[in-house]
Image 1 (tube, rainbow, N blue to C red):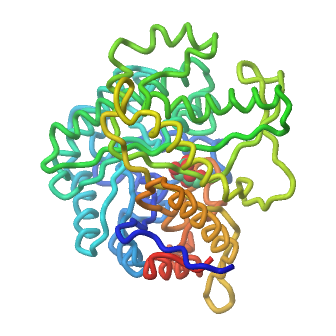
Image 2 (image 1 turned 90 degrees about the horizontal axis):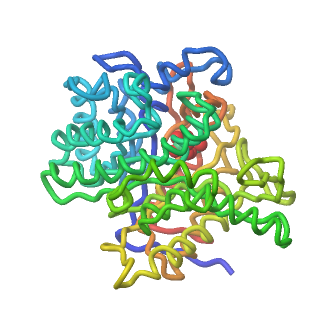
Image 3 (image 1 turned 45 degrees about the horizontal axis):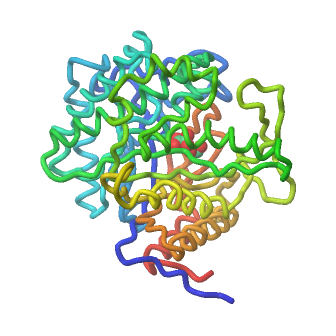
Length: 460
Ligand code: GCO
């Protein structure tokens, strides 16, 4: 039976992006180098040797891009700020021209009645700080708080929603364990230290933002989360799924929402975490007005002793549709949202262990990379993306129906852009970008999204 899935009046519809993936202008107007600038300029790191030097030239075309957001009818835009534009050496001297850019962007958004959601860190650590050890060095967390203060002083008269980090787990694991992201390091203890310091820096920055903000603000964080399923119902596979869930999801959710660290559950990490987690750290980390959930795909695993510590391997089950990067599994977003709600928000209504304040929940990224392109008439008929969006947003609605108070949904991404180690090979946008000419074209999915925003729901 077809019915209309209506969303609450104040539901926020938006799109997300990140500085390095869209801005370009990598060395303009006094910007310092970031670890991504260094990483892409060394051969072998990115498909086809592509870089974000120019990306989709958003730094120069932001007005045109805000006009596109307006045409799409977005309520909000989530973007990230490049730390090395503000503090080229990571700490110390402030680059006014860098601050001016975000100042202009925020003004342009507000002029067009689009609420800015700023994220302070989306993988692009100033190279100068990496040279001093990067995230595995505890000092970086304090440097981050200083940067947060500088930007708050400049923008908080207009900017109300502040996200400290985007996917700290990915920053730590892809950057310092798998080495697939900048700075390209493969070192387990370094990755664990990096993750703890990223989370600590969230707490320190939250404090700095609230202390220097010129109006009441919301401070949040955005996490990459993926429900983990066992390949079979055997005890071995179920235990494997539970271990992977701990590593993938609980290493960020537990400290942020419960004030505990699951690191202790793994003998090998336990030893390290004793000296790593200092008294008071976990209390500092547990502070949140807004939890951003990024969902792309589920994770299915089977027991496999070949892999140390986790003793599990990912499998790709038959029977579902796949995209350029992942299995497509819409129910996963429902299962994730309801699980977070039940496991983290519900057991603490009051008393010991209670959350001081129950944060709001939003989907801050969801989207799909599918090959699409201009048809003969200049239109982009990306039906697969429309199907993905319909099915996923319907599952968000289902979670809301069951009581999870999801406040908004941000599509990843506004425009096609630089997909990290995969370069320009994966298109995620509602807006198609010709990377040669920088011409933008709203895809059919963008038009579909506009109708959903206008009607605040859709038939399903
Ligand atoms: C991430 C980031 C985005 C990606 C997107 C698609 O998840 O790594 O937040 O920068 O582009 O998620 O992979």
